[in-house]
Image (cartoon, rainbow, N blue to C red; front, side):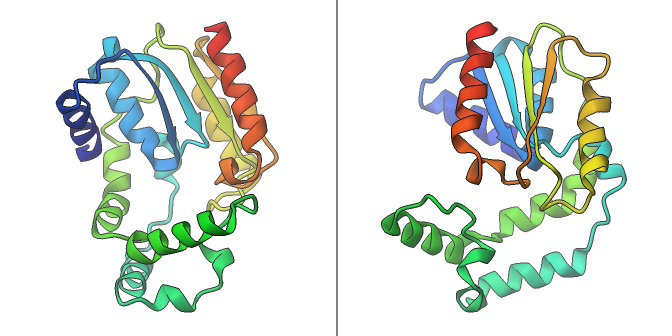
Length: 199
């Protein structure tokens, strides 16, 4: 769980103190779950943007060869030949933002750190709890599963099962792909503000 350690170190060095509202996406759920378990006093609330919950990793088909190909495709610059729609999902970006996003994607879409994190995801999922500290209010914003390797019903079932016996976990299903912040950003902001006002 390197990201958690590095994040806490960076916050400490910047003299930023909690408790924090942790907002994370997809596999960053693992770091968020570890954080709230190890350092509950540092976490005011959790907001999960389409979290890949620990149970989903049990059923995940991990393709190491594909990860390696993606890494080398990015590393040697072949990403420049892919259509923009492959890595720029947000239709509301300005032209300047699109250019910045494109340059960042060329540089680090599949970095060494991302490759390493992806390879260890299944292993890391076994190390984190499948529940939230009952004192920490949590909002899960869940996609329709498009962009994951799961069907809508499978993907949403993970969230439903995760939250089923946790009264502090609220689940909102959204009809948007996995990177839902690119598609329904205004609704996300509204839901998050409402959640924070009530908690």
